[in-house]
Image (cartoon, rainbow, N blue to C red):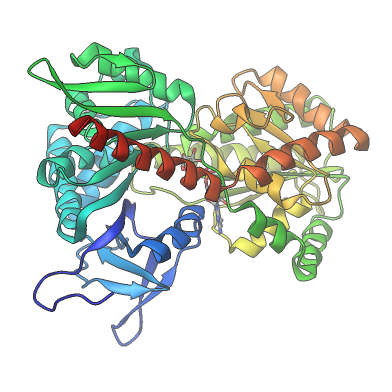
Length: 483
Ligand code: GDG
């Protein structure tokens, strides 16, 4: 589309997220190159972007980087700069050391610092301004996740013509926990700037509605919230669940690639072809229950229920938030535990745990999923958990056993997994033994049913459902202005 040179270009569909869907590398000569980061969200939104003249607003992942907007693979990229202080206060601080633990049932203690909050407000305003500046009249703007909860309201104040969506990728906590937040009312009012507020599970949506009832005078009637001003209703917000998913077909396609299947065999061979390969794939995060998993696993060796050589666990712990104190401590604890288990039960040729504090290419991840007889998802709290869905999508052979925490959003859909409470170590041990010994017929029945769900409910279906609800609120709004 042609734009006048004097005015900034305007877009009909704008996505706003903390991170852009591209990664930047600085070349030897100092120039920047950009590579698309292959997340499900980009894959799902790409067709929408192409069809609707779309732009993506977000941070490029490096401090103090001022880059002009550019086009990448048909998506207009609009970088928002963050200073090292913003990274410390808005990102590592308020987002990842206040909101993240608070929203995950205070598994770690949230830190409350007024300077962090001030910077969170300032950075949210920067994102809102950037989105407001490039949105066409009546555009649809979709804001993503907990780092940007104030953006919907800030945008609406500047641009009442916009249709605004917000999706929270992580859980929304019960009011008794949320109430700790000194800025709880501002957060709620910030999110209510959106026309549709989406969550992973219906319990997250109802926790949000309770917080609205406790903190504001806006009447709620699920899933609607009537936002009032001086007691007069002004507009209607819809708060409901839209469980996110993955680009299921692309995982299945990769799994059908003979080179990746060969790689899966090599991985098993490298482990000494044990009877059972178990796998964990997580960002190294205290919400993922990695310690609980290791505890159960280690005890099974101690009990003599499993033996080294017969069973091997691959634990991929993708480095994450490495400057936040709780993550530094967690890494030490996990590595101590892994060292103890291996020290105790390794032989010269085999180790119980193959621990990898590394990230891998997607092809390697798919090979790992194919190589694993059992996938362990033991999150103490997780918005959805895409790893569980990726494992299922990969297993076109209808084999493999998923052990899945009840506290991950995915457990609402993947009912045929072995569902566990990760706090119950004995229960977890039983689940592991059951997975190891599960007959092939049962594995197939369960995997088939889970695959049906994941292949039908993919990420495109998720974004379509959200955007359809968003479009419906727009027509509703027009009706209400001119009945
Ligand atoms: C948040 C919510 C919600 C991991 N290691 C590697 C790698 N990964 C990929 C996985 C998966 C993604 O990262 C992780 O997604 P999860 O959903 O499991 O967890 P979070 O990062 O905590 O995501 C979560 C999600 O947002 C979406 O709404 O489900 O609940 O916490 O795709 O495959 N990918 C590659 N190498 C790795 O080493 N290539």
